[in-house]
Image 1 (tube, one colour):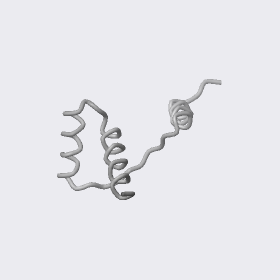
Image 2: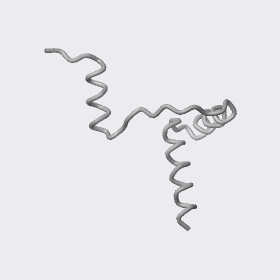
Image 3: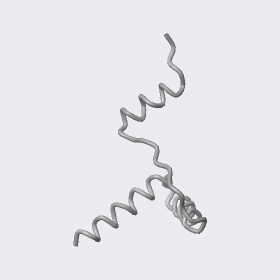
Image 4: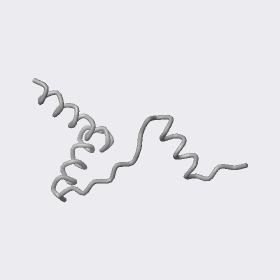
Length: 61
């Protein structure tokens, strides 16, 4: 039996350990995120991940 597109996507996400997280951000923050992603050539998710990791490191110290 063929799998639906959503089933295939869910299996892929589960395998990679990712899930969707929707948040509301101020339009200025969104513009900054988009600009940083464009300038670094990384995805917006990668930019957010790096920023959170940097914040976590700074809090530990």
